Image (cartoon, rainbow, N blue to C red; front, side):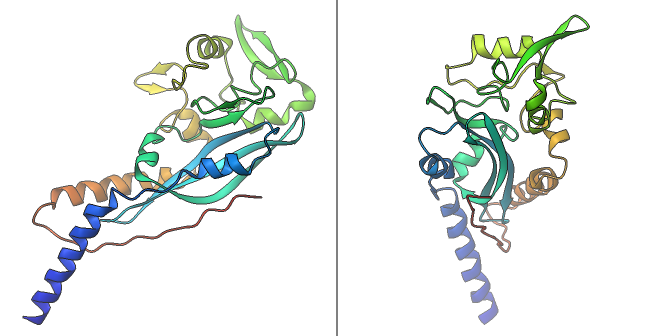
Length: 242
C-alpha cells in the first residue's frame, strides 16, 4: 500500500513537472553576447551545436561560434560553452545549426536575420576577396592574406556561387527572411540538415543525439495520458569567452 501511494505521488509530480516544462522562459543568451560586445566591433555569431537533455522534463541548450574582429580586418573564431535556452527559442532555431543568427558589420548595423556563415560581412566584400570564374561558374575566393577564411567558413568543399549570393542579397537581405541556399531533393544547401552542416560538424552533439531525442519524444507520446515514467534532466551553464 505504501509503495502504491509513493508511486502515485511520483507520477503526479512527473505530470506536474511535464506540464510546467513547456512554459519555462530563459532570456536568449544572444542578447547577453550582443550586450557584452563593444558597440564598434564587427562580429558574427553562428549556431555551432544544439542539445536536449531529459526524458519528461527537457532542458534545451545552444553552443555558439563567434567570429570577432578584435583588430579591425582580422577576424578571430572561437566557440563558447553551452548555454541553456528557452524551448521556444530552441524550436525557432531548430533548422539553423551552422547558420549565422546575428552579426554586426562595418557600418555598425546589427543584423538578426538568419543567413549562411560569412554572407553578411565577408563573402562579397571586395576588401577580403573577389569573384572568380571557374568552368563558366563564378565562385567567391578570398585573397591570399585572408585564405584562413576559406577554412573558417568551410568553403573548400562547399564554395559560394555568385548566383547563391546574388539571390540572398536581392531577395532576402534586410527583409528578416532566412536564406538557406538552393534546395535539392528536399534538402537545402545550408541549415541543420544540410550536407554542408553535416560535413562541417560531423561530431556535433545534435547529430549524435537527435535520433535518441526523437525516440524519447515518440515513446513519451505513446504513453501519454495513462502511462508514466521517470524523469531525468541535466543542465549545463554557458560560458562566454575563449
